[in-house]
Amino acid sequence: MSTGNEIARTRSESEDEPQIFSALLTPHRSLNRTGFLAVMLFLSAVGFVTGLAFLMMGAWPVFGFFGLDVLVIWWAFKVNFRAARASEEIVVTPSELRVRRVSHRGQVAEWTFNPLWVRLDQEVDEEYGIEHLYLISRGRRLLIAGFLGPAEKASFYNALVGALNAARRGPTYHPAT
Image 1 (spheres, rainbow, N blue to C red):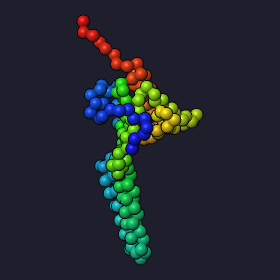
Image 2 (image 1 turned 90 degrees about the vertical axis):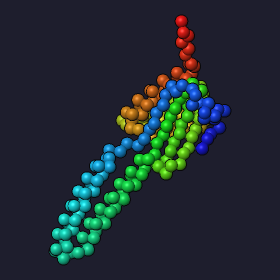
Image 3 (image 1 turned 45 degrees about the vertical axis):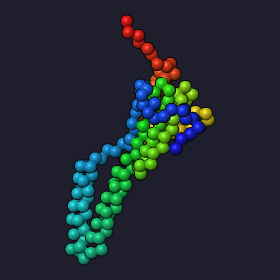
Image 4 (image 1 turned 45 degrees about the horizontal axis):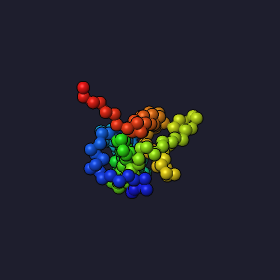
């Protein structure tokens, strides 16, 4: 997916330029695969023991519901892990700012902006901090860094503003003496 803000460069031409800024953003997940297995084993054991107690009391349908609960929790975690496959890459070179977003299903969307004309905007809540970051160019807004928390967005905002300012200054040449 592209916008009218594209500049006429092929991907190979832009890859030859030095990168001023590059960030790969991914959703935060506090539970890794080992933690997931530990949680599922614990829930399965608790569900089985509790269900067995109900089975011995004669309430046999409860045993099945404990198994169903564990199955639903397993499915919810799998959906959560699948959503963690999403990513957003932001690269700034002297001649372009490129945003490449990959959904959890693998669908790719790319936007290319001229760093001389793009502006970075933010929505700030007094108590929460930065809620949203936007790239604005030619009247269009693109939401970026949605995976980050408020403090991370503030740090990302400062780094990206610095990179855009460096791109606006142009390349720096250091002649050999």
